[in-house]
Amino acid sequence: MSWEILLIIVIGIIGMVVQARLQSVFNKYSKVLFPRGLTGREVAERMLAENGITDVKVQPTNGNLTDNFNPTNKTISLSESVYNSNSIAAAAVAAHETGHAVQHARGYAPVKLRTAIVPFVSFSSRFAVWFVILGIILASSTGNLTLFWIGIGLIAASALFSLVTLPVELDASRRALAWLRDSQGLTGESYSQAKEALSWAARTYVVAALSAIATLIYYLGFARRN
Image (cartoon, rainbow, N blue to C red; front, side, top):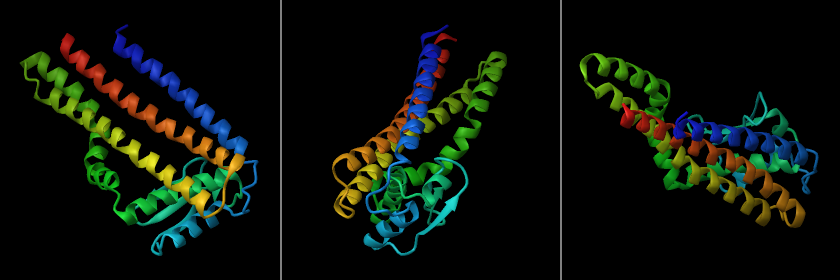
């Protein structure tokens, strides 16, 4: 087993641990009442209003931890465990997703970069491995490595996207915590609980970035050996 494969396995295990811990923390703080008693929907709507954003709609969505902000149709979708819940966890998640809406409204630079490369990354994530496989087949018969290196480039683009996503997610959490503290008076233990929930969520993006980089390293190592 090459060290590159071992690296991918280790990062995968870390990812499972982080995901399990995130779920545990979310479940724990889903039972803790948000001091102001606002539901996730009310938190999102109030944060939007206080930031002067009037063209974003808050809606429920199916699933657990499936919360997201869609800049295309300007909607904040909150999962069932967040939308109608008045817990610390729900408030933190709702404020985080609203933080993304604030980023778009303020023209946050990393968001502009991520939005610009989304169409290309959408293509690369689906077809990169196929380019690599076809490139290997073509290289073995003709010696032409063009398709193979196109595939490597697509994998590199996915890794870049994961790296660009990190500051976007961290900044959304920063905005969420600042609003919860300054506007909702969240302090002490309640603030620490919201911060812990968002910190574990952020770790999932760190693991995703590491996984994307490890995958790129693996294919570059494969190219070097072969």
